[in-house]
Length: 402
Ligand code: AMO
Image (tube, rainbow, N blue to C red; front, side, top):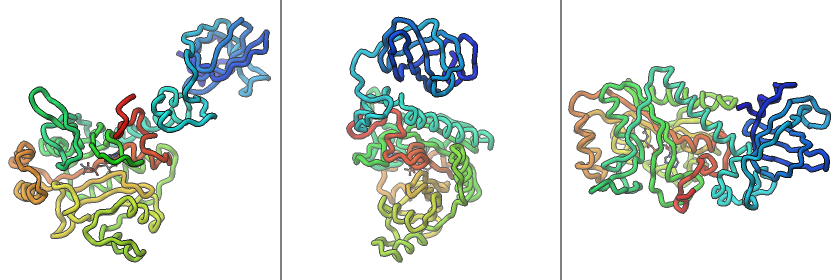
């Protein structure tokens, strides 16, 4: 199949191309069709007695010629036009984007919404970004693993988990591959990464949350949790540079430093509090930097598997991009007694974690990793005003179809 973009390089050749009708002008004897595929548009001229409508799908056989009338200077003189499919209803969404549509309507008719190049581009960039992530890690000796999405126990603990029927039992959709990526590393797969959907039964509808998102995870044997931060910084820089943005140095601030800074700016926050979305915005306003880490969060506000640094703080970090948390990570506890205590202290059911705790009784390397939300990253990278823009068919509180 020749694309429209390729057709521009094939002057004087007879070719076959396909696409949607972008525009149709009937001047009586002669007709002009602007044909569109996902690489661009091209003018087609025909003398055939034909009437087509916007978004009908055609295959055109014709010769590529230079033209004074075509805006691009090139057009196709059609020899044969095959109508593959005609539009049967009034278009509910304008594929040219000239007539704006409500976001809900756009998502309902996503297949039409996607015909706008700027929308299709989000998903082309998403593909580029995930491949950049994958190649970066493969080049550094990581392997990609595929843990199950169906779990016997909620992975991170907590309530925000989807329960599903599993034969005679209940199962849960993975909130994260956390416990399984750790078990892979404990098993001796020293550097692993994962690209998989995660499911979070968060009830609130916000512009930052999806109930199904793509998580880019890493888990690796480490000397220090800064090893993980360095790797995350490097891979994120590469993912950003993929779309030709420059990246400055990524600064690292301690949790304590940031809380004090917020207090100096009159924000009502105390050491020990987690950051709210409002706090995150304020931090961005104060720091005026696109990318930064905050590290050393209080152990109490992090997941049970997080390695403590001292009595108060942990070897954990978040990465922020334009004021939004896009990734989170830590060194993990590798001592089974400490891990058991951490589970009990948080009021979680130790029996749910027996399979996981067992893995810590046969020799465990110090390890750590991170999880990055692909749609959060894309939202900030492209300046999208809703995370749903970065998901082809987003799942939220009210949306299960399409
Ligand atoms: P956490 O729960 O912070 O950490 O999630 C990691 C990253 O995943 C993204 N994310 C989401 N994106 C969209 N919608 C959601 N509902 C949503 N929830 C999370 C965010 C977030 O920074 N196991 C740890 C990671 C680790 O320590 O390796 C974890 O899941 O970008």
